[in-house]
Image (cartoon, rainbow, N blue to C red):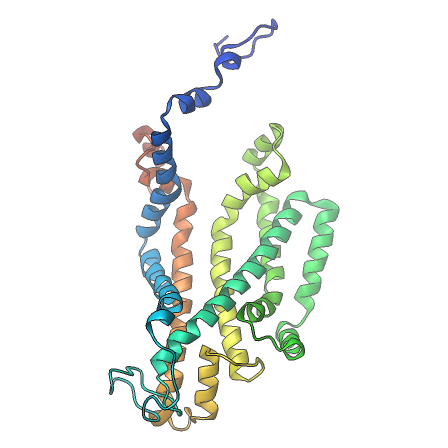
Length: 341
């Protein structure tokens, strides 16, 4: 019998007196070393893994650019004013207004910058609402099964059968939302059911795995098993879905603003395109007002491209073997066991 095996004669074991090897090692490790290991494990190593992928670098720079434009940019760039320049000034002619002006002499670059916060708020609201509900419903339904699964999936199926775009148009007409957060939430109302069903399917297969059975056998609670064992397994899928939800919210909001369904009382990329089309005749006269519609289109394409690349690259961050190989605190023998990737 080894020293750590329980004894059947009613005596105490070495483990019961001194604790497990992991607990002893933790007590022997100085607090500063534990803090260094925690920083390396939770922050430095994921960053190194993410930065090793070109998609994360390009997408991350793009996402950071838009975040800075929507936060710092609105402080550095003054808001556009009527008659601050000639009407329909073409881009790259006057560098005080590098992207030209619209039909009222407002700078297109200034309008783009001050439209970014509203777009970011709508995308954030759409992610929080659609991903939050989908993860909650899909994970619980897949793990619990039985009646809970049936009820939750029935609710999801009801929302799936509802016509998404007409429902959004009706809600927008009834409530006339003007807050970007409310607009993003309404647009994302039909996006969570499909994601919830896909998450449920993944959890149905994961809950039969050995590591989940082991967690149940040692008495871990359902929230602990779901949060610590299952969520990391589906995190890459959730991350990519979050980027897809943000892109969908941006596209749909721009489309609804463009066709005039959503009321606009502030700067917005969709509003810019709608004004360029209706008041500037950007389609029939592209040489005069085409730039007014082109630059919002480029901004939308850029943020969508950046979000998708960034989410695809972050898929590697959840790979435990890659994390072990890039960690500075994991022993070399454990890094070698991670295998070649």
